[in-house]
Image (cartoon, rainbow, N blue to C red; front, side, top):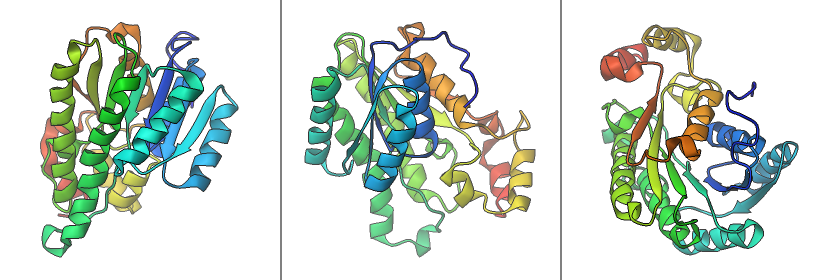
Length: 267
């Protein structure tokens, strides 16, 4: 990751908990937070990946890994208690655990559809609900990681469209319910972000990547740092009056609708 545009120590003294934090966009956010001075706890299911990610983060600051499945409420309660025991009250919660695979609705089993909803929607709810008593009040913030599928219908993505729409409505509802406690809740919607598992699955070949690139007004794919910088802003005092927002960071993808995206993907 290149140099942040924010001042050093932006999140000094803050504690962050990040689900899905062992890879991809969420690991990029974790790295940015650690470099900004926060103590970061990352969560994931794969212990080996989690340990490797924590080792990398500790080269820049204070980090801890806690293995737990976001689909299991009791497990998340224990994970969040572990985080609080280690570092104190949470200032920042990032719900980034997600599942995705391209599949037509008629070719998808009920279990496959349910698995994505359980990871994305139920996992986000479980994490937020279990975290509430551990959040610093007032002053804490929640960042839920969404996707363009929340508002752009896409073939082969019925499960993700349903799941991320649910995540966004959960964001807005919690912003209303938790505002009185001084807790802000926002969503971040990344567009096509290079060097992520999502891009590798949805744009597997160079020809698809080139067509997809041609459908982006800014003419480039996003980077994990693009999302991390937005997360830093939303987690900072600069966003103290921002809540219930669905913050899109997609290079203009959403301006053109899903049609160009689908054609780029061959539909």
